[in-house]
Length: 224
Image (cartoon, rainbow, N blue to C red):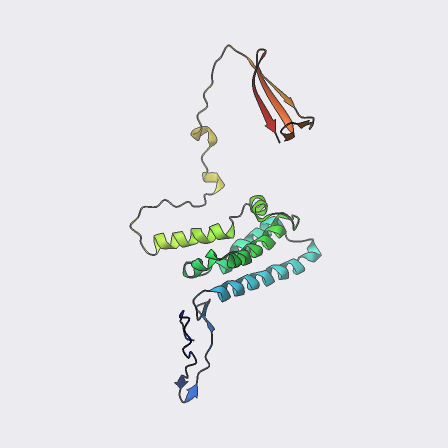
């Protein structure tokens, strides 16, 4: 494989012999699990990985039809243990290829298929809503996170950088220890009135909350 980004019209068909046998010239090859193309654009690698994960998801969907689908916990384990490692393998090498929208759409489609199965949602649900329902990080942000971790740890960068990491629920700080509640004593009494009949207001349809202090109108909030 001849690697070149030149746009010249020179002859790129070079005959190479090994033990008096000519070697086949190719435009892409697989090396250490990453498909390298002669332009180093990694479009073929992203396409191959997305198709492989898509076939895996469809196979799981067909196998789970007899049991009315896999549960959320099972799909979450499969996604984090099998699909996500395939999508993110070697990300520091080909992350620049994600600057192109057509490559981003391929990975987003794979995550969308998984999230629909996890959330048991409609196919018209947006990818942003699916990520919220399944508590999964968008794949593009996940790739950027992995690359930043690699650049910080493996390359031993001198810059100080704080990295977020997942913490188990039992180690979460209690809200009572982190939030200070101050009680304000006031002689004036405030009255809150909420109208939830769904009638249409000037700002739209929804609930309307009105705050009074005595007989004085203090605030009016439109809840959509």
